[in-house]
Image (cartoon, rainbow, N blue to C red; front, side):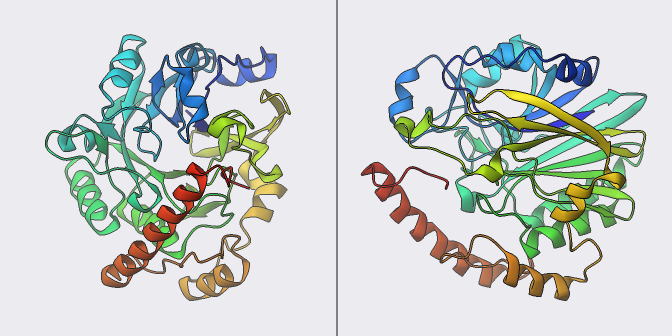
Length: 349
């Protein structure tokens, strides 16, 4: 199976017909993060929201995407409900996970068989970055709450030992190149429970891949299809680090990195494929592979990219401290949103 990062297609853009890409995805189960709901209203381009035009269905079919993750901070940008998006995808025989019409639906995991194995997918999104909590009659995202999530997955694994569990996360800050210490702790704890793989998104750039107890932790897949200069009235522009893109394939216990590049027009072109163990680029992105938790905290403090009034989340068991930090960041977000609405800032840089 293959995992792709963020897909946001606002303007009827069609991906390149690329022989190498088509060969990679042919006859594979492909899972991607659908960053924003499906809508026919392109007037949203002038607003500070992210969405997908209806021809995104063609893109999903082109890349053979059969499962989309909806646990992200933009899935409710243009609507108070995910009903229409889920129904459209269902008609196209595309399964969804991570969001729903209510708390019960949002929290449901996804089970399926592939390649002779039985899988269970769980998906969570961090409320700090804008993932909206559902309730009994309101659409929302299954929240990333590590202490609760650990209990849920432990109980599932204990009762379903024949299933291979994969956990999808929408976490960390935009354009951060390294995982939060809390996120790394959570990912390691998941593997300790018996999880097969942990797959992250949200940073809009490829992060490292850590192999822990012979299981892969992909901290961020980055973008897959997310054009520059289209959203936020043309002001949403990503830096150069967002142009390198990756498709991760898990096959027979191996991890294959399919590297791609985003061109100026937003199209995606294939670069090369390599085994994770042979990837110099992944080694560059993951210098902390063997670090203890304490050593990694020191490393992260020194090398993290996002330092401007953004606190570090060290340990998910420090719930009270983390709550205070979250409140601070939420107030910060209000200020940034105000600046965006005034047209003084154009999003990620």
